[in-house]
Structure formats: structure tokens, C-alpha cells
Length: 126
Length: 235
Image (cartoon, rainbow over all chains, first blue to last red; front, side):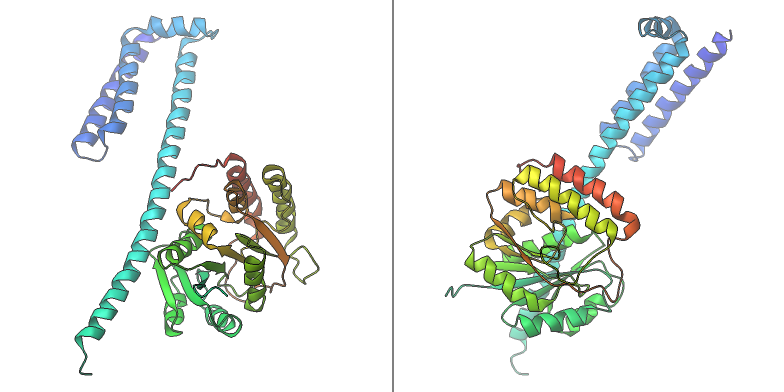
């Protein structure tokens, strides 16, 4: 079995992920609130690349014969939870966006009303 | 007579340049004492300018947000400007304003918080698509189960609201299609709901927000909202 190849590729993948996440945070494209989650995932990858027996043990406990299948299942579950979390965040932003758009529309109306009243006051000689 | 009575007609409109002037004229003819606010839901056509040209108040939403957000903007406007009652008349000219006084009369007489103009209580000439009627029947069962009152036309937007309903709905975030959900919400807040038969027109211009193809998607979304609704206000 080519475990060395698996180890090396997992190691490089996790290092690449960590570097990428840090660079996204540094360029302010990702806020640290979300970077934490991805750093944790990259960390798990990194640990598993060095200590793959952990993966085999976990697979054994779960009744899965093939270690990488357990890893695959684990990341699928994690991805599912991340997606639900992102949907929650999106829903929150959507309702806030709605609230803001309504506030803007009503404020714009107030500004128009005020400027109309002001201009009527300022031109009494017409 | 209540001297403080102030009525606002909320007209949500999206891409309704073909209908908006007829709707305004219709309201002015049959509800002359009421004030009108057109909520222009991010239309890119002439809906906003045409309504402004007809000398009615127009609130422009920066982008299209759907009927729920539009009508809620109308409620917020009504709350801020101390209207004592409001009525929703859609910008697609399907709600005949001549039926409006009857809705307002029932609102006052029965001291109701919500009066729904129903297309299905009596033979009123309106049929709607097969999918729409099936969806309505489903909402009818679900809402009857949840709120304990049978509402025949849950999706009708032709409604009159009391001050209390205005305040509640201006503060509570309801989904993109709020009509069926708002029934359960208002009922949970102790509001009284009355339904009366009205005639409705078929759409003659513009495009409907609920096409037959989207009906199933609409039903699933609204059912999710109704079934998962809790009594706590969400902004």
C-alpha cells in the first residue's frame, strides 16, 4: 500500500490549506471568525498525516473496514455542518439586508420630504 | 365617528408600468378618503416615475426584495405616520378597489384586526390556476390545524389591517410570501380575523410573482414557514 504517498499528499494539502487561510485573513478576504474553523480542519489533516493509525482506530470503532473511508465520512459530515452554518449566516444577513433596505427607503422618503419643505420655506418670494 | 381615522392603501408594485396608473385611478375613485403609498420594489421599468407623476407617495426600495418586504415597508410607513388602518391592494390591478370600502367597513364593524378578501368563499368569478387552488386548500388545512380557525383563502393579498395588525406586522419578519404565515402569526398574538367574499380580476398586464412552475416551490417554502413559526417576534 502506498501509505507514504498518502501521508505526503495529506501533509502538503494541510500545509497548503493553512498558508492559504492565513493569507486570506491577512488580505482581509476572510474574517478570523471563519478562519478558525478552517484552521481546525487543516490541523486535523496535519495530525492525521503524521498519525494515520488514529484514522484506522477511529474507523475500527465506527465499524468501517477501510481507514480512508472513515476520513471521507468524517469530512462529509463536517462539510454538511459547515454548509448548514453558512446557511444560517446567510439567512441572518438576508434578514438584515431586508431591514436595512427598508430603513434606507423610508429615510430617503423623509429626506425628500424635508428638502421639499426646506425649499418651500426658502423661496417665499416666488 | 372616529375623527382620527386615517386610512393608508399600500400598493406593492414590481414592474407594473402597464397597471399602476389604473390601480391608482381605481383607488382614487372608490376610496377617495384614503391615502396611497406605492412601494416600488426595485422596478427597472416606469412603475416608480408613473406613480410619482400621478402625485402619490412612492417609496423606492433599492432592489427587488419580494412582496413580503414591500408590504412590510408599507406597514412601517403606516406605523410611522400614524395611520389607523391600512389596506393592501396589489399593483397588478387584480384587487378591485370598489370592494375596498366593504373590507374597511367590516374591519370597523367587527373590530377585526385583519379582514381578508376571499376569492373562494362564494362564487366570485375568480378561479386561479389548479396548482394555486390546491396550494390554497393545503394552507387551509394546515392553518386550521394550527390557528383553530378555518381560513378559505390563505394566499389572498387583498386585505385590510387594523392599527394593531400594522404594528405587529411592521415589526415582525415574515417570509418572502407572507400572506399564509401572517394569519398564524396574527392569531397567535390574539388578533381577530374575518374573511369576506370578494370578486377579483384576472391579471391583464405585467407578470405574476407566482408562476405555475414555481407553485410547488412556493408551497414547500410557505409550509415550512407556517409549521416552524414561533410566537416570538423576529425583526
